[in-house]
Structure formats: C-alpha cells, structure tokens
Length: 243
Image (cartoon, rainbow, N blue to C red; front, side):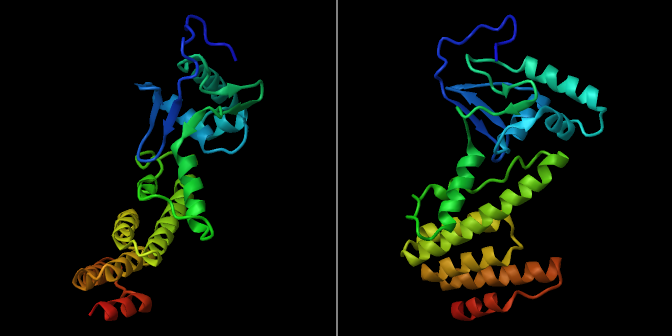
C-alpha cells in the first residue's frame, strides 16, 4: 500500500510502533506519540481486536452501524486515506479486506497471551510485574456497541487470570505479590466474590489476620447495602479462619 500523496516516507522505517488499548488509546512510533482522530482510533482498535483480516464491509458496518452501506464504505475509505504514515502503513489494505500489520505491537494481545499462560498451571510463574499488564480494562471510556462484548470478554479473562495468579503466588510462598495481585482483581470488580476470596486468602497467607477480617466485614456491608445478600459460604469459611 503506497503512502498518501504529499506524505514523506520516514527515514527510519524499522522504528517500533506500539498500540495501547488498555486503560485508554495511545499510538506511539518510537518515542513519538501519534495523534489520530476519534474515527481513526476506532478503525485501528477494531482491527487490533481481530485475529485475521476483516472484510471492508464488516469494518464499515461495525463503525457506522446507522449509515447506509455505500456511505459507510466511503467514510472508511476517507479514514484510511488520512491515516498518518511513518514509512509503513498503519493498516494493510487490499481491495476487499483490512488487517492491522504484525509489526504493530498491541498491549491487549500481550495481556491475553499472559493471561492464558497464567491459567495454564504447567507454565512457570511470570515475574512480579505481570499483574500490571492485567490491571486495566479495555478502552474503558469508549461506549461503542461493537466494543461491549470484546471488553466484557477481556475483563472476565483478566480477572480470572489475576485470581489464578494470586493462588499461584500463595502456593509459591510469595504472599506479598499475592496481595498486590488480588488488589488488582478487587479493583476490577469489588462485588466479585472470587476476587475478594483471593485477597482474603492472600492476607491470611501473609499472616495479616486482622486486615483479612476487616476486608470481610467491609465486603459483607457492601453486599448487604448494595445487593441485599450475604457473602457466600466459602467467604464465611475464610472469615472464620481470620477470626
């Protein structure tokens, strides 16, 4: 794909390009942050969440769902034409399909790979910074309909991975890292009892029974006030250990 007219090719085509979707959108080429319009961001984000080339008509229909097909496709062509160019295209485009190039590093793809390795208990434990990559939701400030299912699927995967990582840290005697990991899971969903169980278990493994008891009472009050329910029996058993 040739660059748009008037755009000069970069002298450093090998510069790494990184796309961040966790916690918010950011595109960087080397040390430079690239500015994109809102619709340009959405084209890249949509393609970054796909695992294979997507038909142009599917991309246009997802991004402009309330627009006639011909106008949606024309809008997509305009967006692709105006994308910035740094020696290599940000989107690989054929006549019928679009693909995010493999040389663009995407944080959510790395996070999904990490989560799957964590869930496979036969793999070695990751380093202590692993929970940081699993700490943020996917584009939390966007409300696009096409993103809702993708965001929820990723959220469940990362929370499950954080809880499993906490358990594995406890089993390895790394209680401090277990507590930090569980705190990320609880921040992701304070009402998720499995995340709260992971945190209380980590506090108990650390020998911090008083804090574990306080966490349980805080959760119990939250569930009663907001949902009108008591914690499950597994949390009750952990609370008994704390007391």
